[in-house]
Length: 294
Image (tube, rainbow, N blue to C red; front, side, top):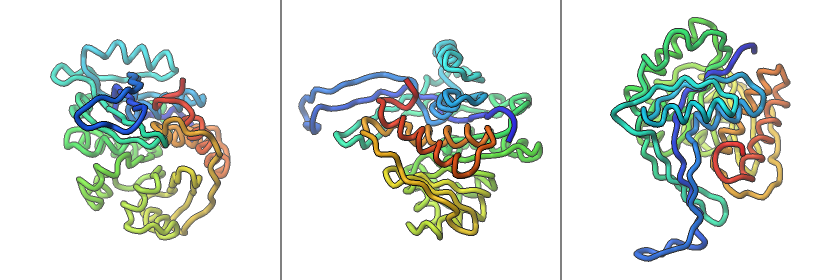
């Protein structure tokens, strides 16, 4: 696969909260609280650039933050295509991290909700070999219509398409049948184990691959500590174990995995090598706090 990667997804300010112990209702708990740039699409774009890929990132942010975010992405090797919103502020995500590294989220998508067709103009696909879309872009009517138009143009141009479902909470809210219909056929699906189970209705890996493989040519299921698997409509093709590392924060691990896999794919590496690079990138991600490489 030749060309740049175009990532479409959310930009968020991540507020990461690591309490020193259990939350005390109605009282105080000491905690480490940090602000970092985040968002699933933003994380994927930055991890792709860190892996050596040529990457563009299209999203919408609050107008007052546009220059700051453009500078942030350029410093990290990402070519930004950001629209500035004068009505809504940039999105904010509060992440609560428990002592085991597990996360809970409070999300205000802000300006991401106003992504529109004008933000994804006709020249955006020039020189692009793969479009990677975060599922968050399908969960609101405006962004969904804009992304569906972009994907239709990509299909007509023979450009590869990869989808990351992004959120079991939002999948449950909109409905599985609706989500799969909105997404349409694609070349790759990057789902975690919970998302794959929700999309198919079974935890059986072979059934997941066969079902999802009818819509997505290649299905990658991220299984956390159990590693990852790659399959098609024929079932599981190969799987690899996870690396054993100390987990500090699992935020962005799935985004890092997808970026490692795609970067290896663009280099022409084998499916096994792509899977291994995804796993290695995910392992790096869980060893730092925040969703982007430091």
